[in-house]
Length: 222
Ligand code: C5P
Image 1 (spheres, rainbow, N blue to C red):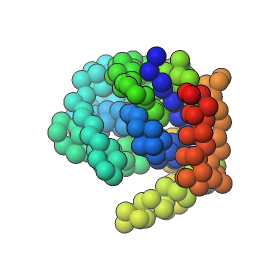
Image 2: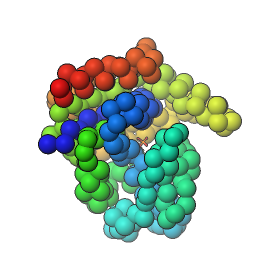
Image 3: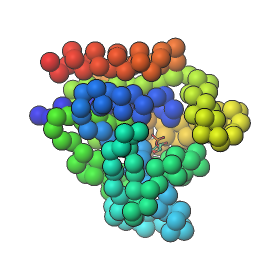
């Protein structure tokens, strides 16, 4: 069976960065599942969809004309041949993504698309339900957390480096609202799989977390 590592956890816990580092070190493929919900959200906004029309949103998720390309700086993401790698990272898109992600039809529409990312020599998948719903057979499941303040600080720093000014208090409020929405939805809520390894990254550096995950992978897959 092709090996899969899942990394789930709340927004801003560092899942994406760690998934990229570990994938690079192992030479494995990567699935940023949140990007699929973000792309669905962006496509809905571009098409001015009525957010109460769940079946229209589900159809958009099913038909998403998306392409991922591996670049030296990370993944480039295209929607209908338009590079939307930065556009989908907007906090507003995150909130809309969280809204469409609560729809059962949308999750169902994206399920097979996510599973199709499994390929030799292995896959690292990050999101909210990778270990519980999408890849329940994964041999290594990680649930990554960090305090809300720490996660907001990290996001604040990232945005500042990009020249985007936001208030820290607004970021804390946004993260809390999104986590609450993701944790309390009835379908595939954000929660650790029963067999997940918990990692609190609040006081760890990126290198330390990357090494910890690599050590766990070595134990599980060798
Ligand atoms: O991980 P990211 O912040 O990019 O995800 C955006 C939103 O997509 C999350 O807040 C969540 O609502 C949704 N999502 C999800 N299931 C996943 C990945 C993301 O519901 N596996």
